[in-house]
Image (tube, rainbow, N blue to C red):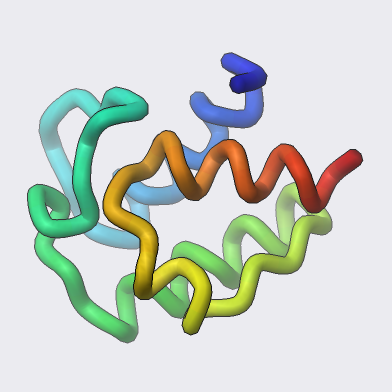
Length: 77
């Protein structure tokens, strides 16, 4: 997994979920406090900032931020 992409996705997640703690690739969406509006905000940031489109319905079945970062990386290739 690309560290730079992970760090950007983690920063977007912190912002979207108003999360104060550290985010690692193993941080789950459960720990962040799931919420569809927050997830939409997160995917919007990824799309706007990284030009990578990952549908919310795909993100909803993911467990961790690492999984999302890997998926974003695939979209950017």
